[in-house]
Length: 212
Image (cartoon, rainbow, N blue to C red; front, side, top):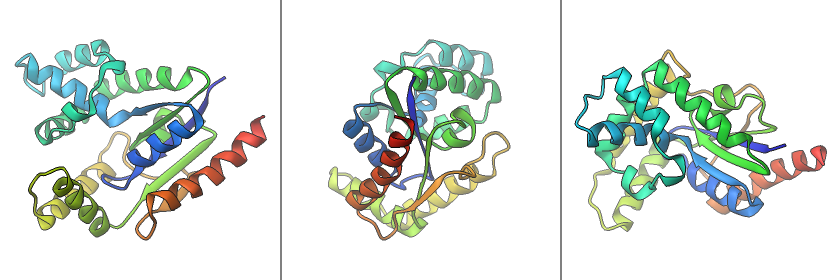
């Protein structure tokens, strides 16, 4: 049996940082499902294939190595924009969701974060968290992250981009971003990552005790 923790939330909400922290604490594997769409987009770009070539995208989705996804490479903004075009293809989503489920099913447990984990990928996960924060807070965090990494950015541009992504994610026809009905809401607008982690631990520990 595998214990699955599903973490959903909008862009820059802190769900990825929280997911990695939780996975390390419990000794579970971690998968940022957003990277799987970016990996498909990068495979198409590397092969010089158009991003709207569904057959090529499906093949790429079936073939790339989940264990070999590099966050530093796939975090590139151009790849992110390309991934948003790949992610609207229902057939590609179907392939990636199946691969994500296989990842989640391997013991002893897994933490998956994304936009549709609790609602679509792992609807039976014993723990579902929906991590969010105001768009302004998320833009400020992303702005300081970019500056901290030596980059340049404008907070207003980041805010506009986040609001555009929220609109796209929440209103898409296939697997829109929304909390699962039984998800625990963690609004991190006024929380440190440590406070969010401790809140998540309380929820997870309670379910682990129930299942033991």
